[in-house]
Image (cartoon, rainbow, N blue to C red):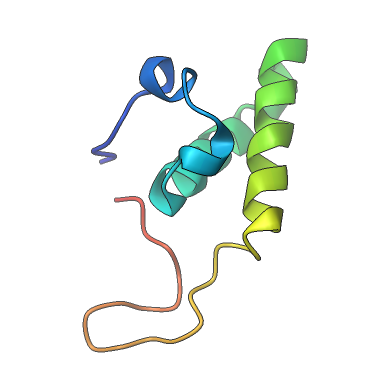
Length: 74
């Protein structure tokens, strides 16, 4: 279950101010709903993807004993 800021709060921030977990969660959520998104939803999803790409993707560079190589939004 996602525990974090909701889309209402995040919509008042630039995508650059979002945490990686927020980008990962909303990317996954919007990706699941892609066929049903209107133009505004598609635009938000595209901005999230661009921010993820700008940051170099969602993969962690290194795993340790508390974290894997995937960003977890759970």
